[in-house]
Each structure stands twice: as structure tokens, then as C-alpha cells.
Image 1 (tube, rainbow, N blue to C red):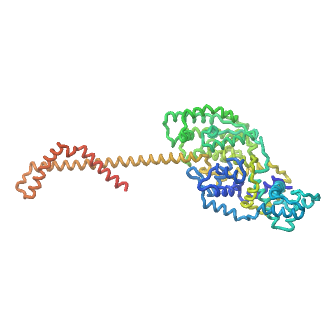
Image 2: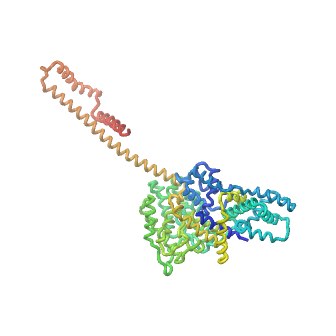
Image 3: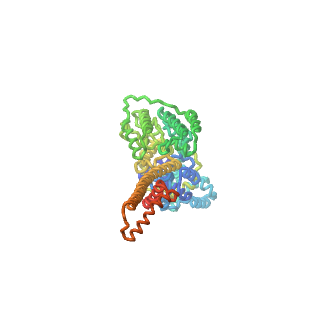
Length: 623
């Protein structure tokens, strides 16, 4: 009999050969859920809820859904914008149609009807649809691998059974022999359902032992953002992620620490944020994440002071110890800290992160802590989670990315020294899953075969290789999971999938929308400043023009006064005499009208002309 481990390992090798990771297997199910339930956007919470309702997959770790959304973004099914995963409806439909091209004949109801008829005609026993369905599912739990990979061996074993029975399991085994000899269509239907069952078991991690304590002795160092998550000083989705992850790791026997640098960073962030909230002297475009969260949620300085007082109780609740730098092992070479510093600086600058004194100090702390994790691992390469000794968990994707650069250390670790919480949560699901979900076996089985094809010829080729390997070195379930974990780590780290920083952020919708608003306000202020500068220039031009006009008017009156006083025009022609006599009245009228206030003073006229000229210039500029 082929056990579940060998069956799953063969299927995993099959998909790996085709360039399909275990995360990829969830994509068609996510597409169907989104198409059925969503209109424009989708979130981690949405997917988690739909997978539970549709397939009974309620225990999948939250990090898996984060990785799944990122994978779907890299495929163009979703796009990340405005803090939301927006649905590309056209690409979504294409993806769904692609899966529907596969044979849709694996109907368990059809098989049940044929089995009921066979039982009644040959054994005189009639079972209900429900009894038959349950019987087929229980049979497949033990024999789906035999049907898919070694049908001849299964049929030979069934044929050797001599003890007759009217139990469903016995009747079902005889039904398989009958269908093999008399109805190839029925046998293929049964085989299709067996493939669906094997795939559904792989997706749900059903049958995998509930491993406990397998990471005993592994030290988990926590970055400062994880502490703020645990204190509920981030959005709820981040609190849920960190709490779930630490719960999983605690069950696996891990020890939690926070290095003194990061602990001091937490306190410093608290103190500076409280001070800024009191003084209200801050600029959000340069603010810390905690300050932005406080402003966004109208959190007061006194509330943050209360949270600061709860810090030690949170550390105590999770048994998180504050640690100094670890000692350097014998014959150990320190990592290239200068190189790591350069990588982080470049990563931040490439993403337009301003490097001020606080940021430089944070980078120094992160470089120190990464060097400590390498020290704790020593000279032994970490090949799986069980023997990795130490991991730093962060939400800082730039740090996780830079810390795995091959030039940092002479020791090559398969398990990265630093991982984001979502990344590690995904890996843990495929290594140490919680398999207590109330799975909707019938729906999941049918959907698995409809959406994921398995070629008999290629499967048998991989089974031959796995069988040969198992004969020389028995493949236990734990070995299979460790091999799969290492493979999953490499697949998730591939540049074509998840190394894109924009996809690898833990910022929530609220945070991203706040940053967009801050950025927009900054642009408006900049634009407003530019317009203000233009307005100042226009006003200066208008004042000069108005002053010039008044000067020439005054000059004209002076010239007129001189002409009338000192030039004898009695011999001039009559027309000029009339004109000059009329003009001679103007100075007298000007003084009289000014005395009565009808003609305004110079300041008023200057202001009036300035406003008129300014309006004309601005209107022309705006056009």
C-alpha cells in the first residue's frame, strides 16, 4: 500500500517539474472565490473567510493568504493600488477559463449511483447515497495513492481476498476490479476522483501529523514592529498575524527574545511619539509609523503612555527575554556588516526613503541584530527550520531581503536568517500545519480535479524515482515536509515572484491611504508655495506699472501747467486757444475736486491701479 507521504511527495515533485509551487495550487480556488464574492477589491480577511465557507479550510495560516495575494498580483490577476488589492476582472476570467479546459467528469454522485447499482445486483445490498459517499472517501484515505500510482498492485491485492463480506469496503474493492475489466469509463471516473482526493489532501494538509515541539531550541528574535503589533498599535490584521505566528512558534517549542537594541528602539519610539503628540510639533510626511497610527486613529499621548506601561507585561505574556549580544563562536568569521549597511542604504534610497539620523541609527541596530543571528547559527548551515538555531522576525521587507545576500557570509543557509512574519507563517503552514479544519471533502475533492490536472504518464515516472529513493533512504513524513519547506523557501524568494518590494509590504490599507493623503497634501503645499511666489511677482509688476502710470500723469500735469503759465498763445489759431483754455481749467478743478474728496489721494489711486493691473496679468497667466 502506498502511504500518504509517498503520494504527496510524488505529486509535489510532479508540480515542481512543471514550475508550479504549492502556493500556485491555491490560485484557482482563490480565483473562484473572488469571482463569486467580490466586485472590485479583495483582502486577506476576505480570502480567509471564503476559503473557510467554501472548502472548510479554516485553519490555513494568515501568512499563506498574504503570499497568495502577492502571487496573484505577480500574475496580473490583482493589482496593488491605494492600499487595496484591486481585481483585474479580465485576467481573473481568463484564469478561471483556463482551469475549466480540464475534464469535468469526476462526479462523485455519478460514481455513487454506479456503486449502489453494482452492490444491489451482485450482493443484494442497497446503500444510501450518503453511506456510499462516506465509504468512497474513507477508502480513498488509504488507497488514493494505490489507484493513481499502482493500480495493478491494488487490483492484485483485492483479487487475492478470499473472505467474502457484505461490507461496503469489500464491495467497493470488488467494484474496482469489475470496472477495470468491464467499464474503462467507470474506472477512469474512480481514478479521477482518487486524484482529486490526493490533491485535496495535499492542499488541506489533511492527514499530516500535528507536530508539536519540533522547533525546540530555535530562538526567535523579534524586531520592534512585531512588538508594536502585539501591543495592538498597528491595524488589526497585523495584530492577528503576529499573534497567530507567535502562537504557532510557541507550540513548536521556540524561545522568544528581543535584542537590547530593538528594545531600546521600542522605548525611544514610544517616548518621541508621546512628546510629539503633547507638543503637536510634527510633520506626518517624516513621522514614525507609530505617530501616523496615533494621528490616524485619534490616539492621545496619555493612551500611548498606558500602552508603554504594558510593554513589560506583553513581553512576560509571550516569555520574551531582553538579550545582549551573543558571544562569538570558535573559528567563526563575522559577516560583512559594511556590505549589509550598504545594501540597506541602497534599498531605502531606491524606494525614496529619507535617511536622517534616526534612520541611520535604526539601520545600525538592524545590522547588529542580523550579525547576532548569524553568530547564533555559527558555522553550521541551516537546512531546515528544525536545525536553524535562530531567526529574526520582522515586518521590514528591505531588511529581510538584504540579510540573505550571499556575499555577507561564507556560510550558506537554506533557511534565511531574517524573514517577514507573513513569509515565515507561509513556510510553517507547509511544514507544521494545523490540520484540525472541518474540511468540506466532497467540494474540495471535486474542485481539485476540475482545476488541477495530473498526467498519469508523468506521475508514474516520478513515482518510480520516489520509490527508488524510498527504498534506499526511507522517506518519512517529517523528511518530506522538511524537503518541501526548503523548496518552498527558494520558490518564495525567486526574483520573478516575491522580491518586488512593493508586493512585500505589511502596510495596511489605512496606512497606505494615509500616506497617499500626506503625499497629496505635501504636493498641494508645494504647489501652493509655487503659486504664492507667482502671485508675489505679479503684484510687484502691477505696483511698478501703476506707479509708472501715476508718474506720467503727474508729469503731464506739470508740463501742462508750464505751458499755460509761460507760453503766450494769444496769436495761435482759434482751435488751439479753445483747447488750451479748457485745459487751463483742469489744475483748478483738480485741486477743488481733491479738496471735496471726489478725486482720491495718490495712495488710493496707486492701490486701485495695482489691483486692476494684477487682475489683468493673473487672468492672462491662468489662460
